[in-house]
Image (cartoon, rainbow, N blue to C red; front, side, top):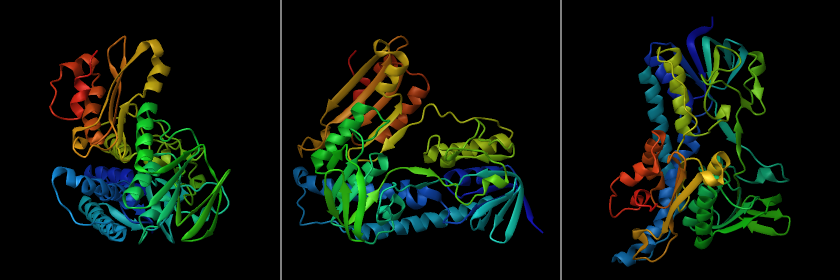
Amino acid sequence: MNEHFDLLVLGAGSGGLAAAKRAASYGAKVAIIEGDRVGGTCVIRGCVPKKLLVYGSAYRHLLGDAASYGWELGTYKPNPSTLLAHVRAEVDRLNQLHLGFLEKAGVKLITGWGRFDDGHTIAVGEQHYSADRILIGVGGRPQRPQIPGANLGWVSDEMFLLEALPERIVIVGAGFIACEFACILHGLGVQVTQLVRGEQILRGFDREAALVVQEAMQAEGIDLRCRVSPTGITGSPGSLTVNTQTDSLSCGGVLLATGRRPFLEGLNLEAAGVAVEGDRISVDADQRTNIPHIYAVGDVTDRINLTPVAIDEGRAFADTVYGNKPRQVNHDLVAMAVFSQPELATVGLSEEQAVARCGAEGVKVYRAKFRPMAQALPKRGPAALLKLVVEIASGKVLGCHMVGEHSAEVIQMAAIAIGMGATKADFDRTMALHPSVSEEFVTMPN
């Protein structure tokens, strides 16, 4: 006889875990189905291990600058194999923690790949489970470009499984994954060539801020080539050639960071009648699909593909359906960061978006660009950029952008102010904390 639940969750990533635990806390009988490790992209092969690699690669500059601060060091060199092993061990630890969290929450873990049998039934292997409601939170997967030899390249998931790094790598892509890995690998001693199809990196972010990051990456020695796309990859693992329209690049590995798509393969959504728009599951403001008792959260809906967004969507679903606390997620004001070197963080509208909304005459931009104090003695490094985009008519700050050290930490706090409708005058009335980089946000002259 099939086991029946109040809620079945497909996918034990950030959104699915948040929904399952919150629903169970309200007394629902919940099971979560996962064919991979518990934790999802963020914990297993995304944000967490990536940020640890960022920290590891940053020691190149920290050690290099030590002498200017009076620290006498001997010779040093990176050992990426050790770093990668330590990162994997931390991921293992976090995976076990999440297993414990599920058990403590009273959520049953069903191991295997789930597929719809009908609108209320999920099959996992030969077993079948039914539920009053089903939540889809299976996330996304990296996509390889449609070029010959694409199977010879790595996608981002595979980077965390490497035992060692090549001497030279070609990275294909211009988004945050491509740029973050370019900086990580360069910091760990790898010669990096990054191929960018368009005119600049980080399309969709504030153009000026993205260009500051791009110039800094190039100044560091990353061979960043714009308006260049690969036409094919040849060779064998460890000895590859990337062909472009005008050149051939030899390398020890290729990272294809060319986008992600919702992971719909094998779900058999047709059996439940769940509608798909393009590559994604379409949902309303309450995370509901076209089938009233089937919901979806996170990257599988392809709205704002960020871990905190998926978590809030999962919790909002549970609060509304099981907690008698109806609420909807606000997708209009989401802080974002690129953990490149230098770091870029942003909340609200870019200058380009603000001009499109208010017109060029309706927007005023305030900026500060300078060498941060941390680089005063080493006398190196990129300039920090702090930027406020303001609507002239209301004085409201529409966008806040920063490139430089601790940008993500600063923008997180700025997001609170902007979410509350802060004006430029509110920023001006705030007393500066000196000496700090972030004080420039409250001292920009009118």
